[in-house]
Length: 245
Picture 1 (tube, rainbow, N blue to C red):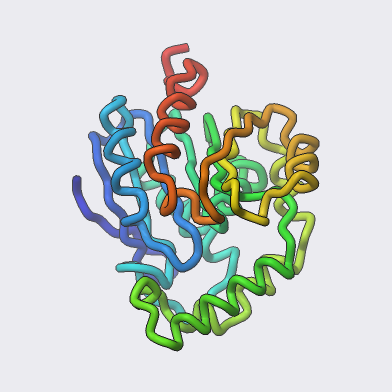
Picture 2: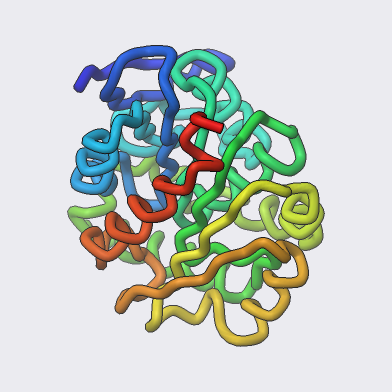
């Protein structure tokens, strides 16, 4: 595994890369408040299937650079930079929470050549009250010294990032409707982000959606890495994603 950085507008994006350049790639995007380490056991298993794996720290997280303010579109451009410089086709994006939303936007709105998409407890129609509530709880926990959040720039929680994300509630849905590749949703059984109503809406936005679950809360990769690995390895075995067809 090698550690590298990609720069976008002066902000360095840290990434762990495993596997030779030029081969089929899985790009991992973590949830807000996490970092790329959450993917280590999952990426290791995926690499054994012959995939190059790229796991990044989103800006303001982990070892990636800090920014004066955190805008959703800057995160999208970061992913596009990483895609262009570190990934090869066929490309599968695996995203958790806001990482899943970034995958949706990059695949559907920016029309990146993505062969498949895996969403970890990420709806296509976000619920502002839940998103804002989680942001506020994370900000409070960080202010009290929560060790798990020590690697996140406080400005990410204290700014208006979530307000900007949910300002256009139809953006994720519009992007989803433009995604025509295989999509897997791994839902957390104890999560409130993807309930029956959200799932019904997702199936309308993504008719090709495959749904599985894991005994987890919202942060499925953190809670259930073994289950995520099993579901992901099966999904990646699909010949439509392997580049052999």
